[in-house]
Length: 109
Image (tube, rainbow, N blue to C red; front, side, top):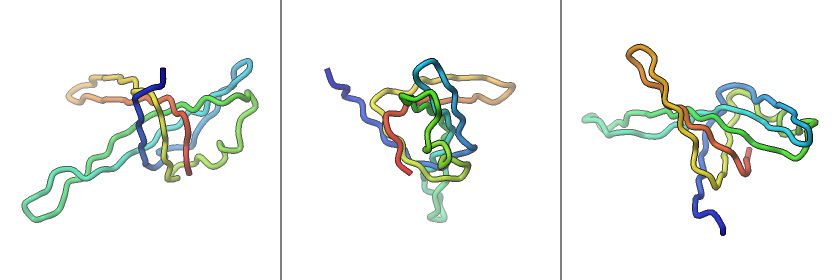
């Protein structure tokens, strides 16, 4: 059965991507920020909301990927996934942090 979930997100990398090798595959891990307009203010401007996300792109090689060299802090990316994100909620003092973790199917630079 095909997935009925389809998520596309565009944002900017918040730090350089990293690579971790396993026996016969590897994973490129990266974090990115998605900016969106929030509520309209009385003066006609909008608030800005930033959502921070973590992502993992599994590849068939355990020797890295040329893609890793392109995934540097500040780079604009678009990710595509057919899976819902895993959500982690952490409370620290008077703040609550929500982490969205995506397993990426494809990435566009």
